[in-house]
Image 1: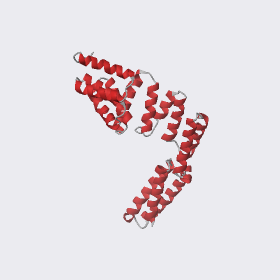
Image 2 (image 1 turned 90 degrees about the vertical axis):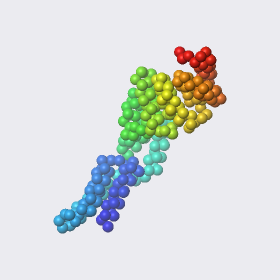
Image 3 (image 1 turned 180 degrees about the horizontal axis):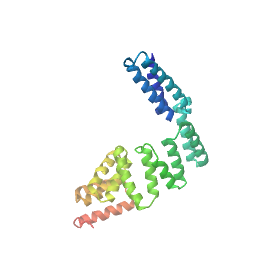
Image 4 (image 1 turned 135 degrees about the horizontal axis):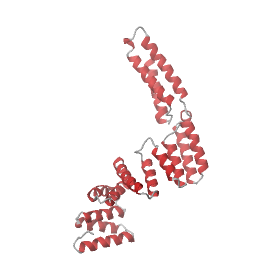
Amino acid sequence: MLLVLLILGLAIGALTMFLFQGVTLFGILSLTVMVLGIGLYFFRKKLPGRLGEILAVLALAAGVVLLGFGGTKAQEDGFSAYESRLEEVKEALQKGKFDRAMKLTEDMQEDYGEDDNTRMLRAVKELDQGDYESAYDEVSAFSDQHSQIYYALMEQIYIEDPSEESVEAIYDLYLKAAGDWPDWTHMQLYAGISLFEQEKYANAVYYLLRAVDQENEDYKGYYYLGAANYYLADYENCRYYFNEALKRDADEKTKGYIAWYMEKIEEGGGKD
């Protein structure tokens, strides 16, 4: 029975922390004490008398007390309430009600603790108000720097910053995101484009092919594949991909670039 209670306490603590967003110092301590109690239970026979069993009971009691201290609104209302409040903040941001959004975010942080969602909400607010440095600070503090929202926010920040450092940073960002999210077409495409712009044409082809395999209605991937193959002197593939780009309603600027490349091929394939 004691072991069952210890395991149950451990499970409740884990659910509170990871499912219901109740990650607190008390929650961590509660899990630690519960694990210690389980260990004491299994090794109780190696301790004199009933000492091991008594210590396991004390660990259970201490874990329950710590879990109570670590209680949050999430434990009372559950995950759905957390999600509902998160959506309320997003709606306020979409409507431009920044003061209300930040008040709601502060309330969530007080109830649930700091997490990537509250950082994300503040970053979106800073982006909307043009404070890119503050937005960068918020996103840089993300605990999960491999999530899609992290990459999306960082991309927007770097795009708004015209400095040379941001250009280099966004190139690295696209490659990391493409590696972490192989099915994210946008990141595959722009990883390929960034490598093309760095004149790493063979590497660019790898990502661009992945992009067009996932989304074959966008002309951009085909255009850059054509251009990359031009510089790789593969004129057969170059023509093929340019034709595919034209079939997909390439804009007038892109059509002009394609015409220039095709003219160079007809002149003998020289690369200026």
